[in-house]
Structures are given as C-alpha cells and as structure tokens.
Image (tube, rainbow, N blue to C red; front, side, top):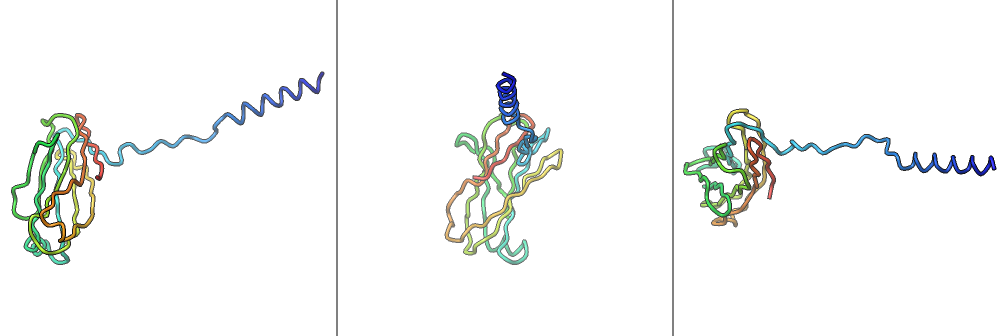
Length: 155
C-alpha cells in the first residue's frame, strides 16, 4: 500500500511540475511603432537619386498624401521634399500615407520620417521606388490614431 501511495504522490508531483511554466513570459514591445504626442505628428518624405538633396529634388518630383476613408486629409503642396501632418484635432481612426511619383526619370531611395510635433519622438521607414512607377500613387504607411497614440504600420 505504501508503494502505491508513493507512486501516486510521485505521479501527482510530476504532473504538477510538468504543467508549470517556470520561464518568464516575454511580452512584445507594444511601443515599437508608436509615437505618443499631444499635438500630432509630421510625416516628411525625402529622397535621394545619388547626389545632393538639391539634385534629388531637381531629378524627381514626388507628391505626398494623407487620407482617411478615401478622403484626402492633407496633401503636400511644396516644391521639394514633401510634408503632411496628422494633428490632434483629426478624428481617431485609420489613416493612409501615400506618395505619387509625379515626374522624373530616375530610381530613388526614400525615407519617411515621422516626428511628434510636441514630443519630438520619431520613426523612420525607408525603401526605393523605380522610375517605372512614374504616375503611380502607392500606399506606404497606415497610421492608427487613438487619442495621443499614433501607431504606424508599413503596407
């Protein structure tokens, strides 16, 4: 009987310890692609064609757009590097950042620089666009605005 009781207790201990997770669970960094800012964020699009900034702006013209539910919220109307803002006065929700290769004949490397207007927190996203994409408008980033939180995802 003692052997049966010992076997039962041993089995019970093995079951309990095998079901226990002794490793600490590592949670994902939820702030990896988030900017927190009371005023909003500035989205700046810069590009390079291999030379100076002035040369890049002479070689290629891009246009930058910010939209929500298919409606334009802001568009860059500058000559040169482009910039739009998603401000705290804008409604919470999902926004799309799109760019159009308006004119030029060179492949480019681009950087989207997103910066908190008040906080100065920043994130950058890089890539390249082929001259063959001239005339196309492409969605590059999705921004989920939730109060003072701006969560950014590449598309």
